[in-house]
Length: 424
Image (cartoon, rainbow, N blue to C red; front, side, top):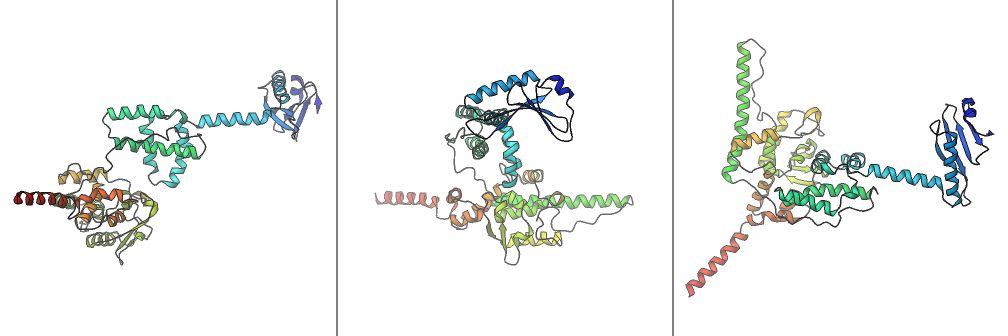
């Protein structure tokens, strides 16, 4: 319908069963689209550089009046006369605005990185929570504003507060992974601090293992904890018996809960805590005496096989018998609602305190396993394979424990010096 579009004309135009278009005879190319739902939208129709006709949405009526719509159409026509495709420019402007809104660190984490992490990282929740905690003041910053000077300042503040370089590097590695994913997704054109070198630190790291007395104390503490559980059950039975209440069964099972079998399994296999938590009965072959760590649950995403020694077999056979009939897909140490365990921190700290172990963490059971292998003469490459390290560098931290290793080399110097003295 061609007409001079006025406020009165628009007011008199009612919604039809089909869409209606009012074409303005005052300003060429200006139209008002009236939908059958009653919605009214201003559109500017144009052709640029010989291309097919395009339509540019200007806004909705009555938010945009007739005079305002003609003014916007005039500006658009002026740009078209210069060879500018105003619709393409509008799309680019909106895309830029969308990128800017999504370019903050927290927006990218929540909208893009977190869905990817859920699908690819079994520790995704811990990783994301730590990033948000460590870089809380940066969450609302555009990612491109996170540059080397900002990182250098952040590192200097952490070093001054006493944080170890290796810890600082680890925190930055998590952020580095997020920004690298942002580059892959083209959310940012380049990595803000790709050229930043990590702080120099002790690559060998902390290696804490138990001596014979400490291991004995740990095993005794694990047994004492279960004895307490049985004593508590007995006291409760006596309590109920005296009051005529229903009685619970006396605890005769080998293990009162999962802590002792988990700790003993770690001592004899070197499994990481998360690998133990995600272990399923289908990963264990008690006939061939082998255990499989699935790649999706291991740190480096590589499947590995671990032979089971006598104690590991005893632990798993006893725990399997105690659990009864279980499916191969069931977790060996299930948590709540058939999900894997997530923590044993409280119970472990209690046992550690009872054993009198200082500066000893659950992960150190893995170091203890490796140290016993090396002390028994196992070569470092075999240790690397059993621990699931991608490179032998990590296994080199145990090299000094090997029989006839560094200590013997140093001792040879003393012997040669003694022989020289005797000759003199």
